[in-house]
Length: 263
Length: 246
Image 1: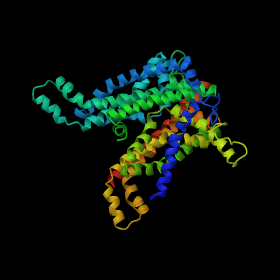
Image 2: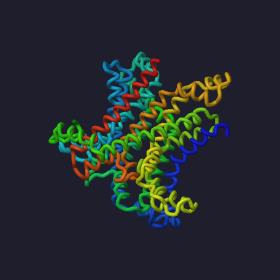
Image 3: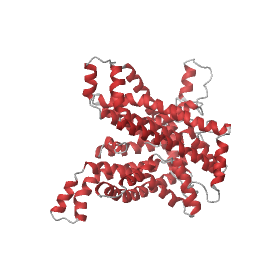
Image 4: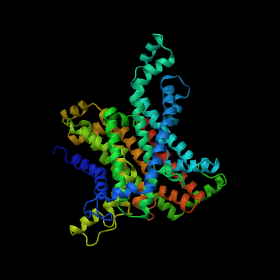
């Protein structure tokens, strides 16, 4: 090895990132009823249990609904806003950009607390509406950043050419600009659905008896009973995430999706 | 204050804040949060930078696969990722069993609900972020500069210190800021791996808001968390600006 220190640090890093995930999967297939390692035999019983456990299924459906709706709303607000910021000559462009990008660094638990006080207590809004407002706000930066990144790559001259050739602004947008943006919008949407689905801190204080998200339900379950059912549920989530990641990689590429976030 | 209920006046929150900043237990929670977040930030940069450097510079076609493996966890639920540590560090967990089997200890030590558990969990959570931030910084540095430095006789370590690290400093600062802010505000990991014996600001805030329903304390905790995060992101953009002008 030419770089022994680099190699050692890299191995430690990858072990910390990946080994716990392997242990989750290994535990999910145990035949025993404790989080013991090595597992007592192999079976699929905990997958049966997880898929038959009403609160998990209900919460999974709730989370999916919330994630999809929040993503659609975030894109409907975020994409036009990105267009305005990048193509228009708005006064206070920097402020708008800063405003849309800020939630990534704002403590989500505090946002949850604020939404709880202002919307649920102050305006008597229901759980779902409050969660939807919170998740949409949280997903906006993804829509703005990823769309912005693909817009920056697009040549504004194309749109001008279309206009010059007699296309209306609307036609130029739908036939020229939108196709250029499509991969960006797709990856923003994908990332946003996944992030919303997985969110804990924001959702935590906004739970109600009638609407609970899956990650929070799983956390509650872990606190009460220490059995491998959560490992099985986690493995199913892992499998779904791998499928989404492969789709993302095939269509736009990981580097592009996440590269957009950290610019 | 947006996160306080209308019937709790700001004066009450600031009074509670004043109490917290003198109360030994509350100070311990604040100190633990800042201390653990700092530790995680240092570990993530120390582990993340070499990985990013290797991923960005390696000619191997495997580096693309390793980059994907490093980024993939960002899409995976924090609950799922943190749950793995329960299996490893739990009372009948793999690590304790291994230590007993190897004869290093007689009884499996308490690993869960310790600072170590939280640091491991948060490192797992935020290392991918550190890697990506450093990766885009390293990728922007011309590899020819490394070669030139090496060609002029500088050792590998000296090239690293005098050429690569100064040029990638903005990316490292971004990585450190994201990891620190993330660690201060993370909830799932301190909740599952720290429990009530290793409270951090986030778990403390939730406890005030849901268990004891003490809105003044919850708001004061929220204020501390927010100030901490803004302080660090302000500091980092200051460093970034200074770096850009010099």
